[in-house]
Image (cartoon, rainbow, N blue to C red; front, top):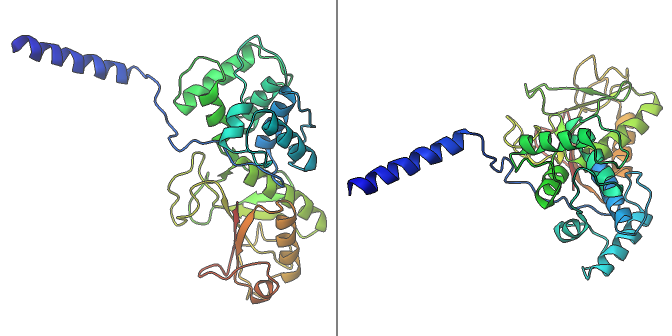
Amino acid sequence: MGQLRRTLTLLVAVTALLLTAGLPAQAFPQAAFPLTSNGNRGTDVVALQHLLTAHGHPVTADGVFGTGTRTATVGFQQSKGLTADGVVGPATWSALAITVRQGDNGPAVKAVQSLLNAKRSAGLSTDGAFGPATHTAVRTFQSHAGIGVDGVVGPTTWKNLLWHFENIDFAPGTMCAQSPDGNAGAHWATAAATAQLEAAAATFATTGNGRLPVGDASFEHGGDIPGHASHEVGQDIDVWPLRTDSAQCTAGRITWQSSTYDRAATRRLVQEICAKAPGHIDLIFFNDPQLIAEGLTTSYPNHDNHLHIRYR
């Protein structure tokens, strides 16, 4: 009995030592392959396009899921005996994901480099050569994600890379970051939501109506965000309505009832948001009765002073 007790004590001690030694654990249990389809934009689409090319279905890696990418996707799905619907879900991503490691070359490596640059600011050359810098960046990401640190991009690393959110790019002249509820740093979203918003903001910037105030998307890995229960999965982003003086980034937030509210500019913004994500906008909450009557926004309590965009 004494020997058994000593053995159990030793096992407990060894287990504790292993746990404190930093053995990898799944830091992101919610990690999953994204659902990507016609109309999407962003880094995940770039990765998809590189992977399709690697499998013999070449397509331009422009980050826009258009007819060419859909045709290539259907062709790949048919070649693998998958449901040929042009929608890239878990089964298609799993079939596309090529395990790559140091010394490899080609489009699949470009996909990895693009994802690391966009989601973790790795600063890699997207040259398709898996050299020491890419190896180090992969290991750094694996450590960040709490998965096995071996520098090899296999199924688990692919899934975590594709799932990981991106920081919204507040490029000069297009957008400004706002955190009125104290959620500084909550400017992360899925690759698709980020790219679709950025594309809308870039086009809207050409109208001369000022920058777009954006805030309260998600934190880097999702999770609870005070005051915004639905902003936890990287698909909900708040945008402020536009002002007639175009000073929405400096003069403060207004409501649709304010004398400085610019309905025409806000209407144009909503149209651009929808145009840059065709079929991928679930809803836009904003209580301007005229925009609601036009079918552009939906009424919801406490949405007089901001537009709540939910990307699909």
